[in-house]
Amino acid sequence: MAERPPETLGALLREARVRLAAAAVDDPALDARLIVEHFSGTTRTQAIADPEHKVDATAVTAIDAALRRRAGGEPVHRILGYREFYGLRLALSPETLEPRPDTETLVDAVLPFVREVAAREGGCRILDLGTGTGAIALALLSAVPAATAVGVDISMDALGTARRNADQLGFTERFATLRSDWFEKVSGRYHVIAANPPYIPTQDIRNLQDEVRDFDPKRALDGGADGLGPYRIIAAEAASFLEAESRIAVEIGHTQRNEVGDIFHAAGYEFAGAFRDLGGNDRVLVLQRGKP
Image (cartoon, rainbow, N blue to C red; front, side, top):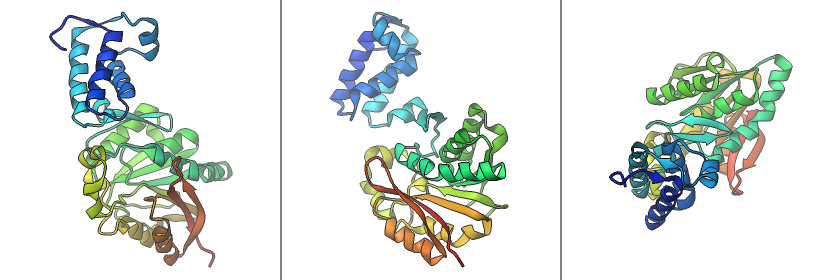
């Protein structure tokens, strides 16, 4: 592909679809379009209105390399270097999870409370544990201009990525990062503690989809022997960092509602809400301190 003369946008899109279909990619048409548009600097509108648009040799070479990577199993958004989440374009890096639509359920679940606190008190302080790309915190900041957030992660790579995303989105003054192993170096009190923690049992990681197992960071997946280790830490330690009226919101594996609920109930919390993702699976629990 790289050695041929400049090609037309329409021809590149057709060839890309054929190559990805032959590699048994799940959605070859979508991934072909994303790759060709990204590396050629074109849009879907251009492809429809001007399929004879010439694409230069440098872009053709980049498209070819990207298609090889995708055909080899690498997720398309890893190749592009970004993913859309809650209407925000977030850069990815090797030590960040790809933010996925399931996690938007957590944002939707806790957003009304964030708005309520911000309206009543003039601000809302959010702690995002295991922030990764910053997805949860930045989505909440985008929806509530009076909110502020601290993104906590043990990975410096992830924290750097979250910081770049915050700066790119214009949230520099409202988003801080902190390198900490869970609450180890956290200080202050927050109205919301949010987390999409590792929740896959160690022995189940080998059974995950190839794109997750081979390309998402293991540290962001492995929840210990039963997948519940991080929830025990959060339930045991969060109270010292919560305001009097506050919420904890956690993403869970679709079979973990009862187990995670029991962990928090034993630590003195009660349900403020349980939410399902678009597939109808249990996905998010929102908790509050129980009445004394």
